[in-house]
Length: 302
Image (cartoon, rainbow, N blue to C red; front, side):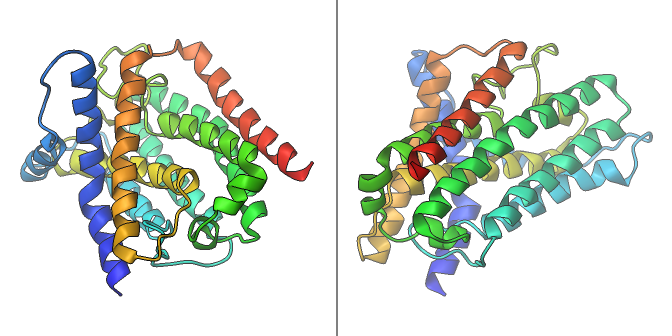
């Protein structure tokens, strides 16, 4: 039961910290002091202390969007093993449930954007689901590679234990999957070069445009769900990149947390050294992610 308690604690505490590390890294690259690492926590507290304001033209769909997005992401988080420990819920085929719980949250957020009746938010929703259609195949193709190597269809069986031998046998395939999933991580979480979470330029906004009419606790739920989603995709990348099992539970937790913070620094470095892609070029990079995972499968079966 202890590992489940730590699992839940990390889900509650660590996601906003990753955002803080990314923001701090970008500030250091720009030669600025930047906001405190704990600033995302302060922002969430401020949002949850405000009152909610809803347009009279919206329906229950608009109000349900943030709730479903947070609930579905939280449920998906219970399927992902952290720190080389079993996930609270695990069964054969749970990787499909994981992907489509995230898809459910995306569907309700896009529906909430359309429910406002704003053509601007409808444009953002259309972009969001279009690019997701290209990101999901890359995620599933990567799952196929790891499922083939582990001989299992459960995320816990696929991502826990020491898999250093698999790197020796199929290192090229796993490296391609890592590259593919890192691209998916950036795309699914609206990070540069796909989107800029800080932009307000209407012609380039994707995810942020869908939440312009939300405020207060609703926006807080959206912000935390986004941080949690980043944390989950980061956990997948970390477990593939560092398939270590020290035999000491606390050491495994420590390695996982340190690796997640290093991943946040890497994301901040990428965002500081790359420019945002033109909208028409985004599908090209997502198709490249699919191709990388596909080549990983070909190398594995041949």
